[in-house]
Image 1 (tube, rainbow, N blue to C red):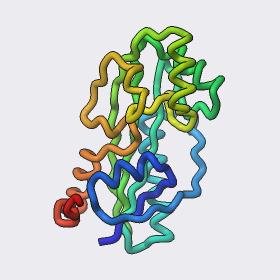
Image 2: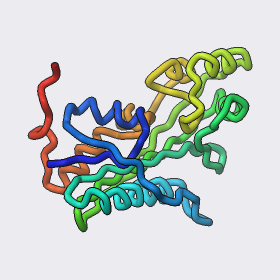
Image 3: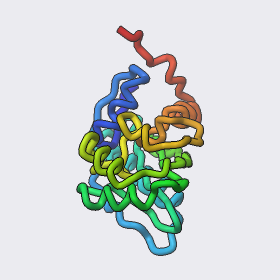
Length: 196
């Protein structure tokens, strides 16, 4: 079985590597624009499917995994900040509040596509401007939705996390991935290699 991750994200690659199953990666070329009146859960699922299906055209005999994530707070979606100024604004907005992170996940194989959406709620600690600035200088999470790396120092920003899979916050829910492969009659345990 050949698996391709439809992403160039080092974060998603490192998560998928936890399963110790051989895979390659190919970045999808899709339009990630939102559609008017589309709920955030519909958007991340649609984009995860689109990424998987786009890469499937280049890897027609592979199982292709697509994923997409957005933060949702106070009626608005928050994407990747891109720089320090935007990240500081995001974290200042989120400090002391609860934020939902929607992660769409999809697996495509030939004419079949299965998908799901995981929702993870993060309760942020009240944060001072100094704490936010120090965190951003240390972790530089400018390519991460919500302006943090939960696998890094960003965990210190949280009071609690509520969700099924902590990997969802990093962008690739592994529990859900095992479920999707099972829907395609694939037992991933059969393809896992021993840890060295």
